[in-house]
Length: 192
Image (cartoon, rainbow, N blue to C red):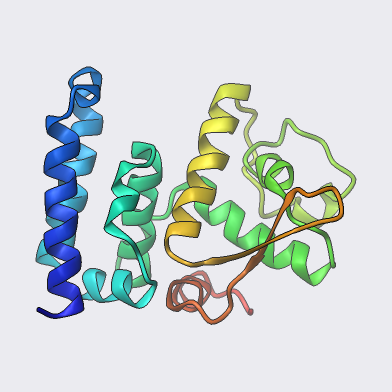
């Protein structure tokens, strides 16, 4: 069985199991559809399946927050298509801001990524991300959900390297060897 077929079979099985679980019974119909749609697009689209395999995506990541799974799909669709940019505003802002912050030698932690997801969190590096961050003000719960699901999606696709800083906080850098990072940078016309 090829790596793509193995991924497809695992993904399908895990999505079916998750949708059949007790927890899924309280899941909204929209979120149930997002999970099913992800499994469907991976089963039908060779380019997306190849990208997931190239990024060492683990099918067990479908057990994460549904928004993370949706963002994995959006990133994969965008990275494997010349015609469609499906990136969420949060993924696009995080990606572009990370490039800007890394060039300025600014350490990128979860708090930094949260500040990229809204214009409401003021930081000492606002000038560096003025044009790349999400420009609208969001509630604290929206920012928490969006920055965590963006981080989880990008980690699932091996787009980030993770280390620890002196305070033992997670510190993120773009994995410039990642197929997804290269494809998204090209798609957004951003120099790595």
